[in-house]
Length: 113
Image 1: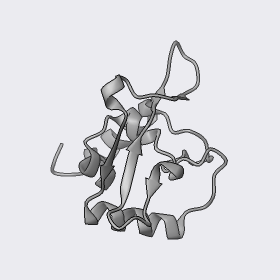
Image 2 (image 1 turned 30 degrees about the horizontal axis):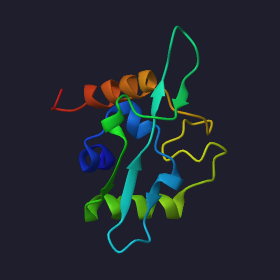
Image 3 (image 1 turned 180 degrees about the vertical axis):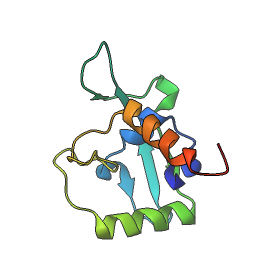
């Protein structure tokens, strides 16, 4: 959720972030939104190499809380062949549909539904 809050990006854009889109070594860490996850006509999800709109391609400075979250995640991360920041449990691209379902399930037990 920290990355959603820090970037204001769409679900598909956040799920399409790769580790190579993040620069945690910069004085002011950055993240680049350079694609989106698409699911069409029952096909498996795939990474589209550009966001929904031309204006959607952007590099932004990360707030400190988001940079710290990514540093912790990087230290604990297992490599995945797709280089995805948020891979599925099998190391592949995470589907926006599955993410929405998981988010609904997580909220179901909270007072914030």
